[in-house]
Amino acid sequence: MMFEQIARDAETGRFDDWALSTVIDENVQSPVISKAEFLRLHAAAGLAATWPIGNAGLLHVYGYLLSTVVTPFGLKGDRWRNGELAGHFSLAPTAFLLDAADAGGQTVLERVTDAALPHLANPAGARGDVLVIDDEVPGEATFFRTTVVSAPGQPGAALIYGVSEGDRMRVVTAFPLAHPTPASLDALAAEPPRMRYNAALTALPRAPRCAAVPEARTAPRSRLRLRARAADRLPQRCRSNPSPAFADVAPRESGRSVASTLRGGHTPAFVDLAARERRSG
Image 1: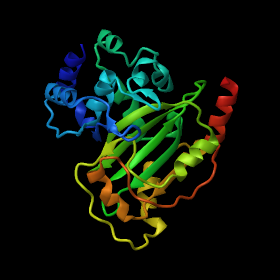
Image 2: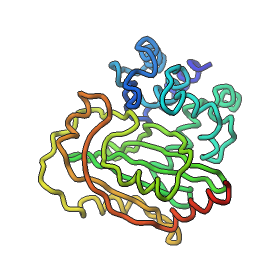
Image 3: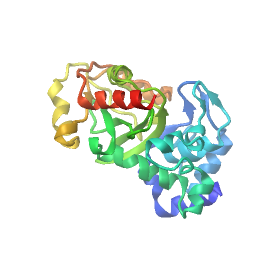
Image 4: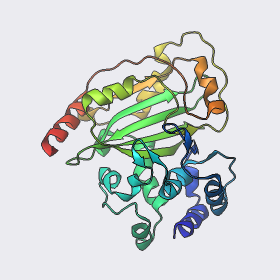
């Protein structure tokens, strides 16, 4: 059934909505599926790939369902099987199961894409998006976006990660956050910029210069993309100060890069998230 769904995804071009990822997990520093499985998945999708970097949708959805590698957060495929992540998108607990998707005439990748991509391409408070972070690649028009989604009445939250290259947003991954709090979201926003969650770029970015970059550099793009209801502004953070560390990303394949600083404060969206947690706890 999985490979039938992969074939349908390939026919409709759904993998184009997903970026690139390394199969080397940054937490365990080893592949989450074998090279043979990696090659078989990409052959089934008709996608060219060079181990260990391939299509993130293929790897993070179908590859994770195949994975038996235990990480500090459990099995990679549990996010699709246990219903928690689906709940954060206000979907039925079985929404991301192969059988359920097939019974509904869809694929798992189709359902995940439909649920995740709008939160990256057009985040808004009305969607339940409570935090958006943009990490820019120095010297490039590329930026990585993190969106945290909190469904009303649902404990926890979902984190969605993607990359915009050439004015098109693509998904890298999505996973549940078990215990988000205002403090933990502030800590997430305050982390130095880097590629995260096993993401990869299509090409190695140019080595940035070490000169300071004015903070205003990112403001026009970020503000224009994050218009929310006036009563529910999104807390949005941009980080772009360059660091030579970014040039190490592709050779290391571990998704580490860029150092910078960040500024920002609490907003009503943070308070609302904490209040929902207290009510549901």
